[in-house]
Length: 292
Ligand SMILES: [Zn+2]
Image (cartoon, rainbow, N blue to C red; front, side, top):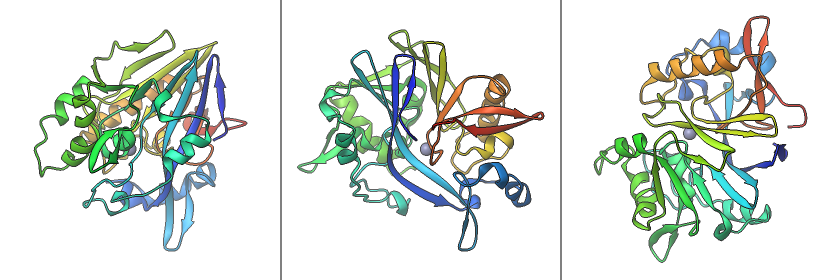
């Protein structure tokens, strides 16, 4: 994605990694023939031919949002040196994410806010980094915005249970350092960034709603894992805590914005990434922005 300007806000995408997922890895239930039928509008950015069938490129990236002297990061990917033995592709990564942040002209100390749309391992990873054997905040001057409903849910996950390790190494050190803001959905940053509750993927999942200069943008996190879900919102992913509620949340968002001007910036859409929900003869589709 090229840098985008929305009113006062500049938005850039900082990619950690892009991984081709097999459809059956992403979706609990899907129709292979229907998926292939969507290739005409998903290709080349969102579907590709792999060695043994179609694959869905999943991007792991942070949105770097800047306006009025503030720097805001939305979702912090997987992180380095994190023990994710249950997820080999995320396990003990060592990627040049911070070098790529520097290349954008940003040093970690100048980040003002870190917004995690939810508390899954691939959205909190760079909250912390390993220093002398300790997990320390990567962005020591930032306020980290965690939703109360997600925090309350994951705070009850016990050691050994799925989801605990990322809390232990990427969320609790932020709370312990006094940098966490555990917020309800009326939280806002200035008059341009607010939260929209979008439960289902996790109980406290939020989208970030940007409004500036007549532009309306939604950073949709994992409400929409892949553009095909705009056409097939009923397909359940393998990653949602409450798949039925995820579908209901998706359907409502798509119905509200199909054919409208709102721009969608999702957490895992690959390539040019930024787009709108268009109404193609009564069929909602995702269309990449010109110049994205
Ligand atoms: Zn995710």
